[in-house]
Length: 571
Image: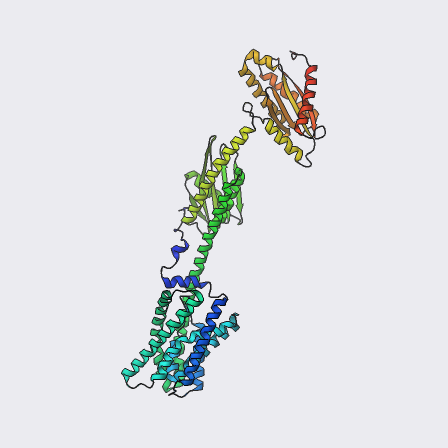
């Protein structure tokens, strides 16, 4: 059944991209996340790792420790930190945010704070090692993961310097101060790293960090509650597992949606690139000197490519020789293409048809020239997907470009034909004869060719007796009887005046029989019986290897025959 030309406006890449600066950064950096770091990024990340280890090492050595170190608890928290940093990643900006405060807060409240940055770095590095082993990441990825622990340095320093804090108010201030210190260090480190490694503007990174702070602020209280529960019973650390599971599900769902959106962006970008390339190639083809058959083939192939179609059909009929081109790589579309083509021609409007999961789009074509108007249509079809409005616009633009090019081609072809055609008889002229003979002689294995010159006997007297109009009519009738008599055996030409020439592949005897029948038919058609004809034939290439020599020999033989004839043909 007929369907509208499209189901929805076709998006451009900019149409479907986010207007948010942070989301734009995510879109721009998504494809680069899995690539190998370049030399600049390696230098920046290496410097970040070295500087972090220097600061974290100094803190562990020189900061006071007011809380005992519990190896089993520390190992458990490091493993949980590895788990959360490895499997829970929320893409944001040019990187990821992980729910690190869910584990970092219990570390700060249950272990010596001065050791927490190094423990966090160990958890991140262990996650990097797992990524190297399971996903084939480069070994440097494990080392560079250490630099992601910068966020732990600020709160560890605050806890190491100001704990213990007495009273609820002092404890709240301690927690808020530790969180603020973590935010500040995270802002400074991430801004410097992203600017140096990837050229991210500081104001853009600041917007990213604001979102990270919001997530951390929501997670940190959960970490406090877990730490309070674990302080009385280490087994309560399992309370973290439900939170980790929930965030894992949310993380996977968000990553899947982002990956899907990015694939959609890539598809649109590829479609746009494909459309632009197809239009450019077609534009170059339109500018070239092509015949109409070649042009229609290029238009159809270009339309199939531009619209990612599985088949197509183009037909033209009218004062020009009928044109039909069919292309396709999917079976079963022929009937649908013919239906879409017919619907477009009948309505003189673009029409889209749908049949059993396949869609076809037809657009009418009209080519107007001095000899009349050629009418037709182009139809393209593909499986499973309808054609959008922007794809219809592309096809209409291609058809319009093709129309302009075809009008020029038809005009040039008409001029070329006129240059090779005798205006009175519409036979080929001497120039056409030269081109055809040259082509025959150049074609290998062509075989024997006969060229014969024909001259009317008594034409001047006939012309003087009955007038030039009757003489012209006689020449036109001779052209007709020669063409009909030769049929598929050859072609006739008018060289000027009453001099004609035929080129044929049949034997000389058969050609002479054809000429006799043609002259007999001519005598039955003209006024009076005083018209005869003489001819001279030559074999190509045996007797002459080029046209000038062939015409000279044929002319001599024709006049030998003419001298043997009486001045007037017998009655």
